[in-house]
Image: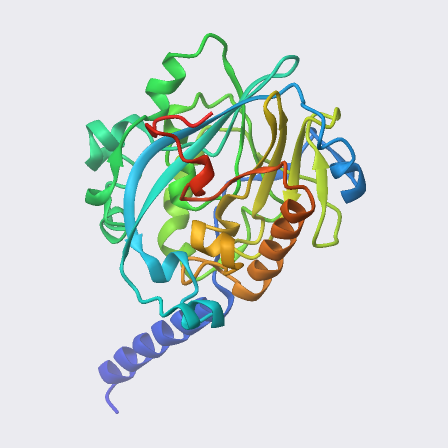
Length: 327
């Protein structure tokens, strides 16, 4: 073998080994720093549910940032026995991109997830989805209804924090419109959870977080079903629901209109929630995701007063007549 061929063979072998390593161990979601959150107190599940039937102080609004269409096989595990029995096949599925405003009378205004940025509707090529990832995510199918910059301009009080369900691009896409001094909170291990897909998205995540202080990670206990009393008064809870991502987090708010559970992408679709079927190819660990989904469904079954907000679709009973905001 000539020297040139040995070099070419070495490069090809190295790339193959690198790709194989990525497939096994993946890359972290972001290189942005993270630190334990100063906000929130670890509690028990018993404490979480003890006052659920009592209205709370939170004013919560469900907002539709955009309509979208994506493959059902990403949203729903079509190999699950329930999906097989129903004869579900892959197709483009209509969904929404949500975010939620959380107003606490003492602690101020927060959002859960971030919707989409102003640039996505007005200068799409300069948005976070302006490059190859946007092409893969079919940016052209996203129909913006309410961007984060526009929503923020309408508020009478400053935004004081962002609570993320997880760091997938469609949940952090509005971050460029949020002032960089606003802290961002996420589940334990969310920034350094490893997936192969992060090879393509980590740069976007870093860009979205640029200028913000270190991500504050909820100090969940080690058990899978950790809960955090966010404000220390039982009004807002962070629930540890790994599976979709390493640090996936659901939020349960005791609102003036009753309890509302924001499940994040532990469940994307109404059909998945009703039948207990986890997401498909969009989720990192389907088995763990299914366990987290089962826990949330059990919680709601035992406390039917809880209203459910899914990752990307309305449950029929919750869908507004005109879907720009739902509460």
